[in-house]
Length: 373
Image (cartoon, rainbow, N blue to C red; front, side, top):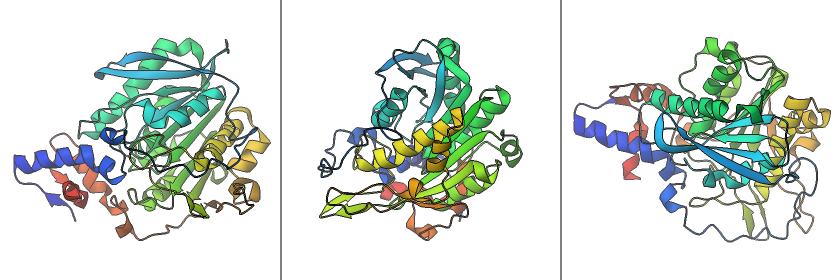
């Protein structure tokens, strides 16, 4: 049910709610990044030493430039050192209230170490207007290309995002691939627990090029974003069926050691966020395989990223005692594992959040009760 707010004081309260609700629900507020992560119990798990999921051979450098749409906020480029030729580039969309690269330090470092540049472009976290947020995201991408374009191979581009930032990826992909003409030799989309995708129409999605390869990855323990949101985006993405796949990550536990599959799984810091074996065996491995297929046509990458539930895709190895990790669930016809009521942001709330994000908008979704959480 959509609730109309009749007076300015209530509207201001809701604006504050939007800025805070996602981070509260996902236990990932920037103010909480100093909180101790759960004690590591996976230190004995063997790390991936080679191939998909293993750290690449490159040290990682970084440079910054100011975002013209968000004065004082920096756009960052992370790049593999020791490569003189232009390299493929990934544009990274962060979660709400996670506008610093430190929140995704391990994932960014991994991608760049493999020979792919990463542009981290913060958006206007304090704004309730989605168009302004998206514009700031795009402005950061564009200024990064203007500043460092000679380092970037814009014929091979990717889009990686988490939560709110993942929801923005289809819109950014249209800007980059259709409006700017990038990605002619390869394009990928790696969407992690996405929030609603706004500001892009079904017609624009149909314009995305066939060479785009997309993985939508959701987490079994997510209580923030309804899996139906990701399913709708997966189904609405107008690329051939063999160019997209939906992956459910499940938690593993062995002898009291837990590897949770929470909404915060992609994060390195934040309350209840940590780097553990699931990052390497799921996120890093799937991204590497997706990039290998999308950018160079690697057949092994296709088998791991788009294996339709084959063992090479879904099996994650074993605990030190030989007990297998809980495998991934992969589908081309995904179904949700929980009722919508399980989640803070439910798929049917989308229209309310669109209206809330319009300039002067005064209608919002039931999620506005979040300040009472």
